Length: 205
Ligand SMILES: Nc1nc2c(ncn2[C@@H]2O[C@H](COP(=O)(O)OP(=O)(O)O)[C@@H](O)[C@H]2O)c(=O)[nH]1
Ligand SMILES: [Mg+2]
Image 1 (cartoon, rainbow, N blue to C red):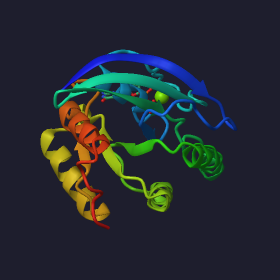
Image 2 (cartoon, rainbow, N blue to C red; image 1 turned 120 degrees about the vertical axis):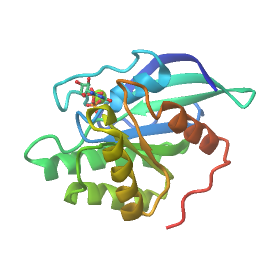
Image 3 (tube, rainbow, N blue to C red; image 1 turned 90 degrees about the vertical axis):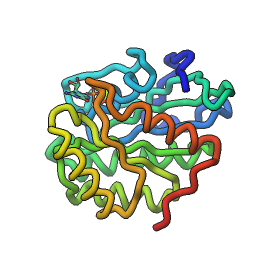
Image 4 (cartoon, rainbow, N blue to C red; image 1 turned 120 degrees about the horizontal axis):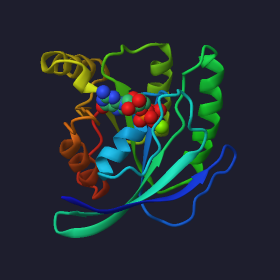
């Protein structure tokens, strides 16, 4: 498994929907500042996505084209970096704006194959996360929960947190990840690439 190239493709602003082309697409969603852009950069092994310590900096959907080698064949995929939700105190409104934009985008782009949901490993599920979970269920797309910033906690904590969320969400597709030290990168990429080849069945409900 190898990333051959990664490049910025385009940005889509609120209200704009359909992208061109027919490459499969993987969408990276999650709260603001959770580490979505850092996750994409680490997976791609390149600083293509802009990271920021200011929550809510990304207002557009940013698309990156990744060329990779997997199981002896060369493939291409789009990674899309979504605006974060729930960063301000008016999080309900923020979420609604986010939902409208994302809902429309996903509705209009038939090549979306997978959602990668970045979730800070130190956080617990709250009402907003429940809403996101419900929304993912309605979309019927396979998803992975990526527990970000695992370098900030010990290994024991990470294992327990993964276990807990795995039982709570009744899914196996949870990955402990760190953009800082690269842990979880190979595991997550392998899962995504297998999914794109149609070799991974969605987890049972
Ligand atoms: N220690 C640590 N910091 C991280 C990690 N991922 C992201 N960050 C930091 O968290 C902040 C937000 O990251 P960013 O990728 O811009 O988050 P986004 O808003 O979800 O795209 C930045 O200051 C990053 O350097 C990680 O795995 N470990
Ligand atoms: Mg970002």
